[in-house]
Image (cartoon, rainbow over all chains, first blue to last red; front, side):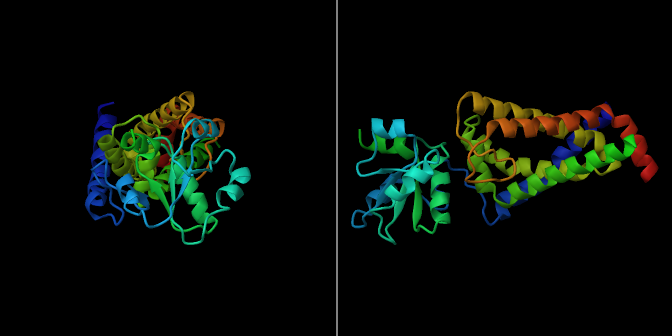
Amino acid sequence: MHRTLNQILFLCLAALLPAIGSTFLHPKRLSWDPDALQKDELSLLMVEEWKEKKILWVDARSQEEYDREHIPGAVLLNEDAWDELVEGALRDWIPGQPIVVYCSKRDCQQSQKVAARLREVGVSPVYVLKGGWESWLTRNK
Amino acid sequence: MKCVILYCLRLLVSGVFVYAGIVKALNPSQFLRDIQSYQLLPYVMAVITALYLPWLEIVCGTSLMIRKLYPGALSILSICMIVFLFALVSAWVRGLDISCGCFGSRGVQTNYPWLVLRDFLLLTVLGVLVTNQWSIGKMIRFKN
């Protein structure tokens, strides 16, 4: 039992060394700031500065949440009904026009998934709104 | 025969954890997003987990094949699997749309029954290895 505990301690420490290394040396190293933007993420402030560009907002939440309220002009496109929605969502999209996808809040994953799928079908540029619908609500209360 | 089966299981678990660890260590930002989608940890803790957990999996997965470190590695991986399973079930209960994060998958729709079954099977294999630690110890000594 004592020997196993020593092994556990040793293994935990052994994993700590490369973890510390990747904290500082990894090419995709993480930020400790929760508000830091990751690759292909935009803050609402940044989007607002793009007034001259005509942005296509894509709402990746559920139909129910979209019907309740959404960003003006946003089109619904979520994973649950991807096949039915994708054609209509991209009907008015002009190639090269920036697409900003959002979901309900910071921790939600739907916007990342929808953005990834849009990129897979060749749509570009596609960004994700940091903070999602919650950040829009906070700013436009 | 029993020893051969146990050796194969050990190899399988080792491979699964080393692979999972490498995939996550290569893309920590994606793994961080996956952890955040579980909505269980504050941001800083999620970052620490995203940086540390992949390496713990790699180190312990590799150590499963090392006689002197085998019991310790097996204990850590068993505890990890219980935590993973708990996190998965809690996300399922809360109706969250998550990327499992298990193998760095992305853009895949969550299939909770399959994910829980897979984790449960892996936990069962770990349980078999834990209960047969002594015979594995003998087997490793024999092989070495």
